[in-house]
Image 1 (tube, rainbow, N blue to C red):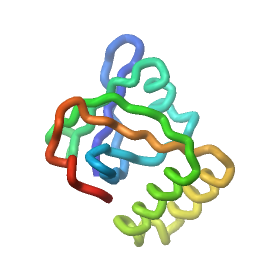
Image 2 (tube, rainbow, N blue to C red):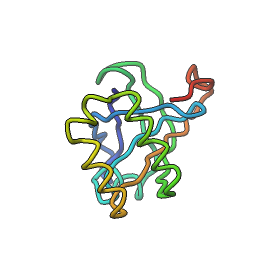
Image 3 (cartoon, rainbow, N blue to C red):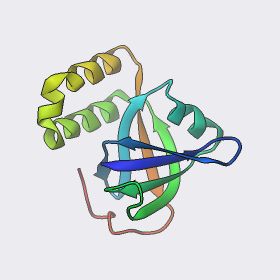
Image 4 (cartoon, one colour):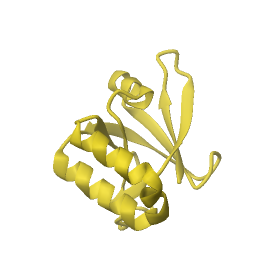
Length: 122
Protein backbone atom coordinates (compact mmCIF):
# COMPACT_ATOMS: atom_id res chain seq x y z
CA UNK A 1 0.00 0.00 0.00
CA UNK A 2 0.96 3.58 -0.42
CA UNK A 3 -0.48 7.01 -0.05
CA UNK A 4 -0.30 8.91 -3.32
CA UNK A 5 -0.20 12.68 -3.20
CA UNK A 6 -0.99 15.10 -6.01
CA UNK A 7 -1.51 18.84 -5.94
CA UNK A 8 -4.63 20.95 -6.40
CA UNK A 9 -4.31 24.17 -8.39
CA UNK A 10 -4.25 25.98 -5.01
CA UNK A 11 -1.06 24.06 -4.17
CA UNK A 12 -2.76 21.92 -1.50
CA UNK A 13 -1.54 18.33 -1.35
CA UNK A 14 -4.26 15.67 -1.59
CA UNK A 15 -3.34 12.16 -0.40
CA UNK A 16 -5.26 9.01 -1.27
CA UNK A 17 -4.48 5.39 -0.51
CA UNK A 18 -3.75 3.15 -3.51
CA UNK A 19 -2.21 -0.23 -4.29
CA UNK A 20 1.18 0.05 -5.89
CA UNK A 21 3.72 -1.93 -7.77
CA UNK A 22 7.33 -1.05 -8.46
CA UNK A 23 8.69 -1.45 -11.96
CA UNK A 24 12.31 -0.54 -12.72
CA UNK A 25 12.38 1.89 -9.79
CA UNK A 26 9.14 3.61 -10.82
CA UNK A 27 6.01 3.46 -8.68
CA UNK A 28 2.89 2.50 -10.63
CA UNK A 29 -0.79 1.95 -9.95
CA UNK A 30 -4.10 1.70 -11.80
CA UNK A 31 -6.82 4.30 -11.48
CA UNK A 32 -9.84 5.60 -13.35
CA UNK A 33 -8.94 7.85 -16.26
CA UNK A 34 -11.50 10.40 -15.05
CA UNK A 35 -10.39 10.31 -11.41
CA UNK A 36 -9.45 13.45 -9.53
CA UNK A 37 -5.89 12.08 -9.26
CA UNK A 38 -5.61 12.08 -13.05
CA UNK A 39 -7.27 15.50 -13.39
CA UNK A 40 -4.81 17.01 -10.89
CA UNK A 41 -1.83 15.33 -12.60
CA UNK A 42 -2.86 16.69 -16.01
CA UNK A 43 -2.55 20.19 -14.52
CA UNK A 44 0.57 19.50 -12.43
CA UNK A 45 2.56 16.25 -12.81
CA UNK A 46 4.41 16.68 -9.50
CA UNK A 47 3.58 13.87 -7.09
CA UNK A 48 4.73 12.39 -3.83
CA UNK A 49 4.31 8.80 -2.66
CA UNK A 50 4.34 7.76 0.97
CA UNK A 51 5.31 4.11 1.23
CA UNK A 52 3.46 1.87 3.68
CA UNK A 53 1.52 4.52 5.56
CA UNK A 54 0.31 8.09 5.25
CA UNK A 55 3.40 9.46 6.99
CA UNK A 56 5.79 6.77 5.70
CA UNK A 57 9.00 7.29 3.75
CA UNK A 58 8.35 9.78 0.95
CA UNK A 59 9.36 9.46 -2.69
CA UNK A 60 8.84 12.66 -4.67
CA UNK A 61 8.72 12.60 -8.43
CA UNK A 62 7.02 13.41 -11.67
CA UNK A 63 3.99 11.38 -12.66
CA UNK A 64 2.92 10.38 -16.11
CA UNK A 65 -0.40 8.95 -17.24
CA UNK A 66 -0.06 5.82 -19.36
CA UNK A 67 -2.96 4.35 -21.34
CA UNK A 68 -1.07 1.67 -23.28
CA UNK A 69 -2.99 -1.63 -23.08
CA UNK A 70 0.14 -3.73 -22.53
CA UNK A 71 1.14 -1.54 -19.57
CA UNK A 72 -2.36 -1.74 -18.10
CA UNK A 73 -2.30 -5.53 -18.41
CA UNK A 74 1.13 -5.75 -16.78
CA UNK A 75 0.02 -3.77 -13.71
CA UNK A 76 -3.27 -5.71 -13.56
CA UNK A 77 -1.36 -9.02 -13.52
CA UNK A 78 0.89 -7.68 -10.75
CA UNK A 79 -2.21 -6.83 -8.69
CA UNK A 80 -3.29 -10.47 -8.99
CA UNK A 81 0.12 -11.54 -7.65
CA UNK A 82 0.14 -9.14 -4.72
CA UNK A 83 -3.57 -9.05 -3.77
CA UNK A 84 -5.17 -12.29 -5.00
CA UNK A 85 -7.90 -12.48 -2.36
CA UNK A 86 -9.14 -8.93 -2.94
CA UNK A 87 -9.00 -9.42 -6.69
CA UNK A 88 -11.10 -12.59 -6.34
CA UNK A 89 -13.62 -10.78 -4.15
CA UNK A 90 -14.72 -8.60 -7.03
CA UNK A 91 -12.16 -5.86 -7.34
CA UNK A 92 -10.40 -7.76 -10.12
CA UNK A 93 -13.57 -8.01 -12.18
CA UNK A 94 -14.41 -4.32 -11.72
CA UNK A 95 -10.88 -3.22 -12.64
CA UNK A 96 -10.75 -5.64 -15.59
CA UNK A 97 -14.06 -4.39 -17.01
CA UNK A 98 -12.86 -0.80 -16.60
CA UNK A 99 -9.73 -1.65 -18.56
CA UNK A 100 -11.74 -3.31 -21.36
CA UNK A 101 -13.98 -0.23 -21.57
CA UNK A 102 -10.95 2.08 -21.73
CA UNK A 103 -11.74 3.66 -18.36
CA UNK A 104 -8.44 2.86 -16.61
CA UNK A 105 -4.93 4.26 -16.83
CA UNK A 106 -1.60 3.57 -15.18
CA UNK A 107 -0.11 6.36 -13.11
CA UNK A 108 3.68 6.03 -13.21
CA UNK A 109 5.78 8.08 -10.81
CA UNK A 110 9.39 8.62 -11.84
CA UNK A 111 11.35 9.47 -8.65
CA UNK A 112 13.34 12.70 -8.64
CA UNK A 113 16.38 11.11 -7.00
CA UNK A 114 17.93 7.70 -7.40
CA UNK A 115 16.22 5.58 -4.81
CA UNK A 116 16.25 2.23 -3.07
CA UNK A 117 13.49 1.03 -5.39
CA UNK A 118 15.67 1.30 -8.50
CA UNK A 119 16.36 -2.44 -8.71
CA UNK A 120 12.90 -3.59 -7.58
CA UNK A 121 10.29 -4.99 -9.96
CA UNK A 122 6.70 -5.84 -9.01
